[in-house]
Image (cartoon, rainbow, N blue to C red):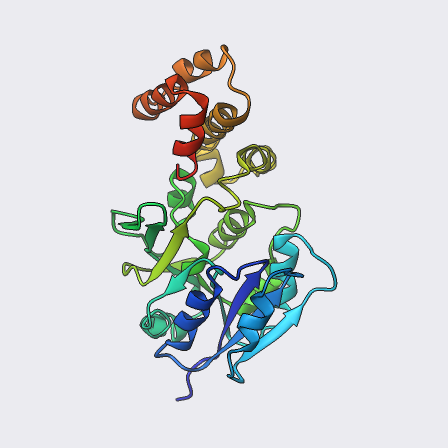
Length: 297
């Protein structure tokens, strides 16, 4: 039986620092039936040159006419996919050579499963240290309720059926939480197949967009939270958790950008003890130490 074709989307804007490792990890895959959809979002560095040095017909290069939002770029890439399945690898992340090969059970699964995901390692670049992302067993099946309690799906571990993602697509109004929004919409309709391995590595570094745009993160999540269907059983059940997370994100960005006397009252009112203590300690630090600590928080 012929192996299913997997389309691997790599969206890139000025990714020259980490791109070679990401591309090499794709070339090293033991599962060979894939194509790479590389979208150059008008990079001004040597990303295009690095990519074009890969002499492999499975690697396909596309360039946007002008720089566009990340999730517009992801949707642009989806239109170019020919595979039965779609995977994503961000330019600062990389895979173990067995990553695709280990997902063969999902490739041959019934229509009940819409997407697969796995655990991963975080690589903290400043300390050159690896840490496993999720310490518990990841659940399979209908996982929407689990995700609303604690979100544990990382984009560079996801493989999703093309017919599903080309219908739902990314919400291009977002700049940061588009992955989160998409996965929850998919999980609301389809089962997920979880893999416990950590064959993907997510690089945590000072240039991570979401870490450097905490206020945007908070505002996007606020918009998302205020526009969900709370008549849905699982959203209604987890409404308190959703708005508790919103409160937490607000405190985080204010610690970085708008640290005021009154913020300590918001921290003291936060109802969960351990996060409250962590936020209080951070609040008491000098501003320059807060910024150093929060780069990787």
